[in-house]
Picture: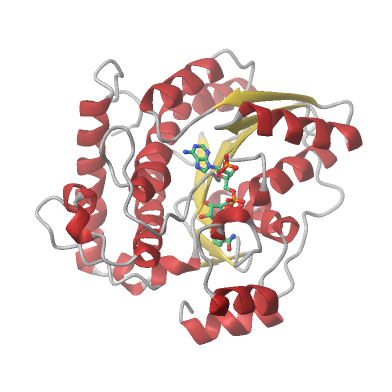
Length: 328
Ligand SMILES: NC(=O)c1ccc[n+]([C@@H]2O[C@H](COP(=O)([O-])OP(=O)(O)OC[C@H]3O[C@@H](n4cnc5c(N)ncnc54)[C@H](OP(=O)(O)O)[C@@H]3O)[C@@H](O)[C@H]2O)c1
């Protein structure tokens, strides 16, 4: 599992399965981030076709979000679909989004799907390297700030709410050169550490795995089931900066559709139950994450990354109270 040959074989042989037709989400509310295109859009569409009553599209560009909303609404006119602005490059935007979510009557499912694969060194307005900012820091902050709403909803409705992260098999492939740095996140922000854009994206997806595992260890699965999944290699705009001929051929031969990618996300967010709390899911099965994640060094890095992430978020968001968000 996790090797590049295994990846190719899986892409050719595995047939992603959609949600069982009889699963219904009537009266439920879901948030899907990055849902104007790609796997997020198709996940949102599939939730509506299974009867979700209220759907929030968390998008950075609301014009694109409005187009997605109109498109989904055509086939599902009864669903209450709202477009909310969310830019994971802006901590203010994330805090506003999460504050808005507090007004929801219930929040059953939150899918942390939005991400970038930025192959050049660029930084967010806060000076954080862009893959790190969007895929880890922004996603981590949003997940923390949605937790009280997810937990409140679970208590009110007597069923665990769901928080699912879109990670990737590529988390197996990163050398994670920063792993022994005294301050891992600080090192990742430095231009000289950005030697290979693809590896940086891989590392950001490894950070997702560390984050959801640590978060799950601090939250009771009876309240919120937290997991992460690999939606597989899909032909989406994620690869918009990848212009190499080799990549184009690989995509043509191997890539799944966004619709198939959404089967994986919804499988993790809905059909996998509390046995999936803290688990990595691949090919719609609970699967061990990389050997590094499970190693003693990996376990120490997971704790260190949690502490470093909270430290960065406290510094960037001085008005947010983080201490009561998790159980410990
Ligand atoms: N496609 C694959 O092969 C593959 C494989 C494994 C894992 N994944 C994961 O699957 C998830 C979905 O990716 P995808 O393939 O569907 O890619 P995509 O088509 O590029 O969609 C990514 C979504 O994230 C949004 N986004 C990007 N930056 C954002 C920001 N700063 N704030 C808020 N939203 C932002 C994008 O918005 P804009 O449209 O405005 O850019 C878009 O809606 C990602 O987590 C990705 O890492 C994908």
